[in-house]
Image (cartoon, rainbow, N blue to C red):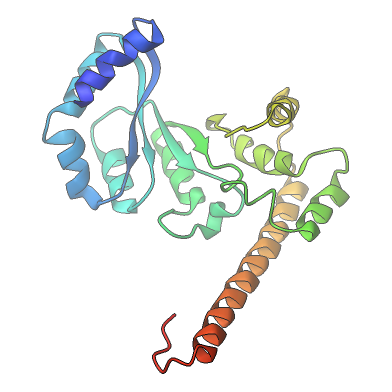
Length: 231
């Protein structure tokens, strides 16, 4: 089915080659799942041959999940052309959930000479919608710049970043992104320090929100009349 979908892509795109093709969301389920999905069934060998034939110009993978899978793929003898990683100024050193600190992911790519593509530069939009105080903080520093532009400049500043992917809903999002990257103004050291302080500010807000939810859950259980307090 995967090979059939791959071949259908050429018809849908009306082309005879694909510039960038990736293994999607590797990392979940560990190395055993990786081997089952791509190695044991010959799919990865097929894609490598397609690259050799010129029908794939650049082959890579996107990563979410267990860092052992990431390290395994980078340590293999496969020549990866790019890797799509989650990179933003919060996840740089404080990734949560299934994510891994972006400074590690990016640093390993630099060591291997592999270009980085960036996803989630706005952390799912949370770096633009956190609070009025966050907006005021960033606007106070650069009044004419959007809140989102700070995150996009952070993600685009590392030298080894090839491109930053952005989910855009409205025309003004596209226009703002074009302004930010035409041309990109890399962050200064002072601005990096400012964003480091901003990150701590955001993490405090997140902790405060989690504490409030936790307290509400406890209070709701206590006032429900139930003796079994489950959170």
